[in-house]
Amino acid sequence: MKSNKRNAKRNTVIASCATMFFVMSNFVTTAVLAYIFQSYADVGQSMLLLIMTVTPLVGIVTSFIAGPLSLKVKPKTILITSMVLIIVAGAIFVFGGGVWSYGWMIFAAALSGVVAGMVSTIASSLVTAVADDEREAGKFNGYVNAGMQCGALAMSLFGGLIGSFSWTYAYLLYFLAIPVLLFLIFCLPDEKIEQKTVISKSNWRQALPRRNVAICLLYALLFMAFYTFSVDISEYVVTAYHLGSSFQAGIVSALLTSCGVVAGLFYDRYAHALRRWFMPVMSVLVLVGCGITAFVTGSLAGCIVGAMLVGFSKTAVAPYSIGQIARSVPREMVPVSISFLMGAMNLGMFLSVYVVNGLSLLGTQSVFDKFLISGLIGLLGFVFSWLLFARKGTTAAAGK
Image (tube, rainbow, N blue to C red):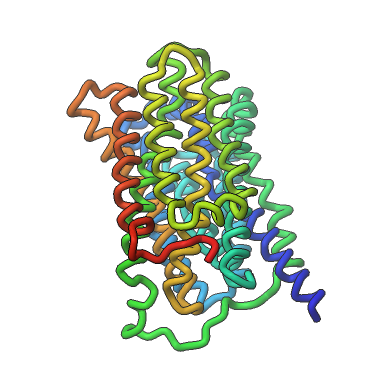
């Protein structure tokens, strides 16, 4: 009996990590964006850019839906459906890219958003549900977010490499979902997330107490800075400061993601030590990382160090925030609470383009302004997280 339970837990964690590989599938689009624009040169600029914004926008909506849906539909069914959708999206890009109308490309990008919103919520909810205690849940969520960063690295690195032959071929990476789909069908336990009480309108508020609202706001705030760093680092290296070509920019992006993988794999080691200072320290990493990148522009060293600090923080805040969200609500409401957190993440990424770019209009509209603003967001995150977690009288410890 114990062996069966252990196998079920192992398969759940593996399945969650494997499906999270596709949450950042839109990184393929980022890698081949210039080629897509060339293929659809007759399409208006605002319509062209929609292929980048539709994924996080749809992700916001589906993140909020995924948690409540998991209480009615088996998570296994949701994950299987998500893998089918990412395969369909890949097929549209591969066979229709440059041939079918641009509306089909937008539709495929929207499917990627559905997958991102659903999987990010369900995978985190599943590993939290099977964990024996809060510390093990944090460790599992670290693995899950490491899986997401591995996907981001593979999508951007290999997407750009394969896309140099033909941008449509880059989306063959979406077909890696086929073996994951088979694993889900045959190995993932076919169980619903535990629900001991009937969820009514009167107790829906349990899923989002005031403290969890504050955590979601902090999460969205930090992801504004994370997303700006990821999107603008290529312009920083290639055109703003002429520190190298797209190859050097790719190395910096790879380091950003690789440090995130390390942060996820070893989360349990440092989270227990930092306890209530965890989020303030991660916010300082954002502040310092963006600050170094903004001011140390004479060589690649500045943005490399900045990318490593920001990349580490980006992955580390996820399992900690999930743990804090989960401990504040009844067990049966955890999926709903996590859906709000994932929605906040997608909202932060979506707003990043408008808020950071909008504020940069007050200055020179340069890449320097964007990284400086992102650093100030890290400073704001430090103050916010200190008030929420670290000051005396608050209770927040990852390892308690």
